[in-house]
Length: 372
View 1 (cartoon, helix red, strand yellow):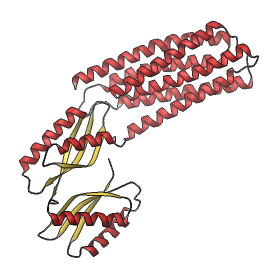
View 2 (cartoon, rainbow, N blue to C red; view 1 turned 90 degrees about the vertical axis):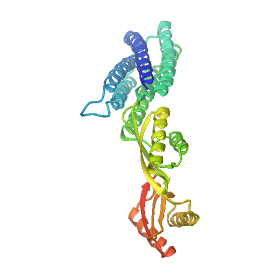
View 3 (cartoon, rainbow, N blue to C red; view 1 turned 45 degrees about the vertical axis):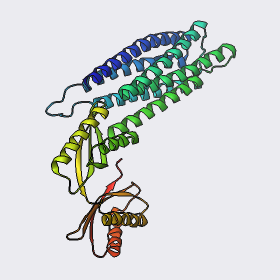
View 4 (cartoon, rainbow, N blue to C red; view 1 turned 120 degrees about the vertical axis):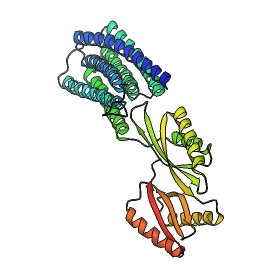
């Protein structure tokens, strides 16, 4: 885990340094030729490069803050600062996009003459290649080290490459056709930038609010649990991220009601260690004691599930099914999707139907949202 952290730090610092150097170079060149030529599209593109430079600084600062050690007040560390820094980057992009949009509108209303030169076109072409390089580098590295800030920087670089291509096309057209395309090109560029900023805000806020675990991750967790009998299942899985390198999860498992406490404890410990080693998630397990190996109980479980699905199409499945033979009590959890609006009504109908179909039994059940 320590090696992974060091590698992650190295990649984030390397990518941010390269991004800072290239954006500083391109920003200065574009601002210079934009002021000389009078092109609002090129000037806006240059200022956008400077905003990207600020974004790279924010990424580095955010990472340095995020890797601080846990404290008494923040025992789970400061990893979520990375999400905040990514959100700050997104707002920088939004601000730049809005400024370009207004400048382009002014250029369309009151067009100014743009002087075009081969040097200007060469610099814009170079910037497009540089942005494509940054896009590929940050996209690949962002996925590798699970950094939203790097991934967003990569997306922003791709948008910049597209907008640079539009700027280059407007410059070429202005070179051959006596019409000012500059304001219109700047308008299109600003729309691309605004779109990238809005998308970045939405994706980062989604990560901060908390997202559903990926299906592949859930499948892997359940596969690991199945390797350690008497554990089975893997229900109500919830994963909470406290930064890209710190995740905590909770999960309920089924165990036979006649399994020993030591046997269950050993299996849980081994599953916990393997999940941490392979997925980097520290899991805490809850336990359901079940007796569904009994043919009568198994048959009853199937009938109960069919009844519940008949009551509502929102029912996904049931687990933790246990029949107390001594007093005919039945316990279980029913998993429902988020389309079920009236939980109280569903519980009332389900209880009534089950007691009608199984008059000798009493039913107690929890209704679980489909977390995973």
